[in-house]
Length: 427
Image 1 (cartoon, one colour):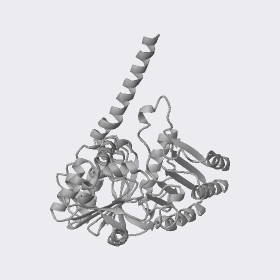
Image 2: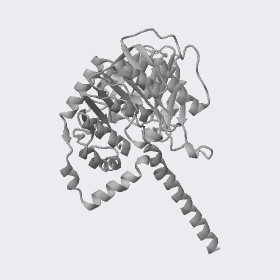
Image 3: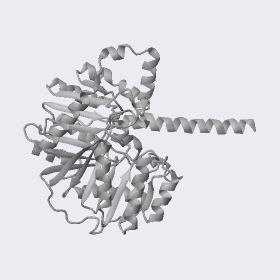
């Protein structure tokens, strides 16, 4: 009897160990693959050619004729989202990773429910891992109003292998004609103006024009995975007229290839830079190839600045894992900064005052090898200038990281950093 019990325990330990190996070593190795850019047009010399090259790398098109509006922090983002939902006539399609409990989640559920009650077709996809703290009463309220609410990959015996692959996309599409995307989740932390520890700093965008169809396609992809349904009628994909002058290439990443579109887009943006490469990212754990790429950009004269969360970080283990990569970056003269007032949750890149990337893509192994992500790369100098202004304002509230910071770490602190780095793909 004792022998049987010990055998079962041993088998369980082997399974746990095998799972750990898969979830760390194998995923880390996959995320560490190199996207060696053989050649790419430089943004400063020919931004249009760069955008075409980027589109080819991620199997998309550069769609002209769009309006893109930057929205900074909850004080600008939520009023725009609520106004758009209140004006919906045909459909609201919404997908998010984080949906918690609180005032903002309550108001959001009320807005979705109100739309459903007036006859709008409301589809909602919540990630079963990121939104696990939502109050059941909110789900019941939305269902009762007529909203179609579905979970993305709840853990089940037949899909356990996929459970680690989450949907990190943040999408809101109104009537197939107006879209929002960026970094914002549905929780009270995103309310306010990003100026205190209780109110996070983040960036979202609204999009009108032909590129809305690609945002809608990302939602349909997510909905299809969650439900098996494929809503592709004319009301879902209406004819979209020109709305502005912004060229947009969408990054609809769903890691199934050798390398993900999220990773390819970042590699291209780094390789295409000539003067300025400013990255603001909440979860910055670059792989070795990216450390080399960022250092190489600095070596060829690019002003490379990385802005990350500082003392207010919702995932302290991520900060530790990130710190493990700083040695190589600092040796490469890359400038690293930590935002001081609150958690900075942005996922933006602005290159050479011309090209801007905004979306849900973190600079870490999860976004590059595991999660479904969405972002847009926009070619427009006015948008790039606004993004550079926002980055400069954030930088004024940040502290620059130096080699001395790393030297002052205790042996225990360095050990914890290394341990967190080894499990970085699961953070």
